[in-house]
Length: 422
Picture: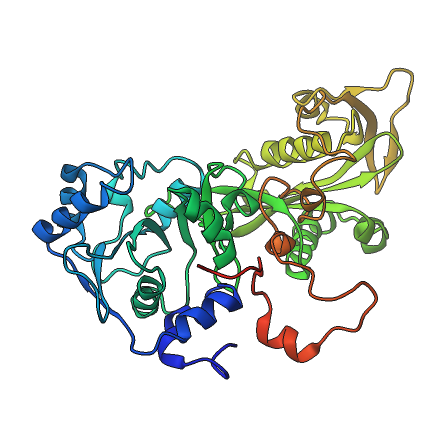
């Protein structure tokens, strides 16, 4: 990392964060380190009154007072050598819970009047930090120096830092520090929201309900060998065990050229479905639900999610084989028996051919789409994927050149936006 060449004291809290190298060096070269302390209510309001003479749109005193009553640490005075007491530099921030971070990136968090149930209490580790205001009337570097140990204490492993540029100066400054548009990682984020991620990348902020009701259904694309084994286990229990289907008829050589959907109930593998692709149609097949879960709506969810997935890919026709006694179920999704086609038998069961017209999908994927969308994991096109992290990283080598392994080991996955900080 940077600790080999830069003073550890100055950057210890920034080690897990993807600040630019120039920012790290600026912070490390300040000599005597500034410190910070939590501001009391009266002195915080005095400092805010001075800040309002320089910055428009600051939140009212009553909102600040409520926030300080909730968490006394959210306004930090910066005490640096030579600082003027009549123009106090300070940092105001909101440490967000997982619910708060999720609300922020989905555009549901009002920073002008924050819901304090989404803000951490003192001592709670935040999932993200929203920088409410940095007021640095003389120099920004002392404030950044004081932020490092604070960040190291609040989030030792690092967490995303969010903010908005309040002035023209910060609009130019924040990208030079490593901040990037939050929409690069969270598509629902506000257009003006910026984020500086940890080196490990921006998390998804998944929030699990505190008390889940039993019978929770989850359907997703199978991505790992473990997911595939879950699908195979469900199919073996359904077709091989119940229907006495021979192994080489059930596992027919098409599994590794198809997309599989795995359905779970309360985390237990319960159902699956396979999709295969042809020139202008898709084939839905191998729908299976374990016997003990057939009173649930899992089969409906599996087909519904697979149809939505195929529509997003641009398919307008779907084809399938249904047991002759299950055509009514497939009819719920628009499948109809193909006129003039007789029933047929495989694995000792009678089937009929079905066809459905799939309604056009407004958000169908096509050439001309954002390239980062098309390289995301299958079925997760609306959510930033692993390669979105490199969106704001400047090219570090010429095409065809050999990578510098030592540099990659020390810097990856640091975001690099270049430029010096003020």
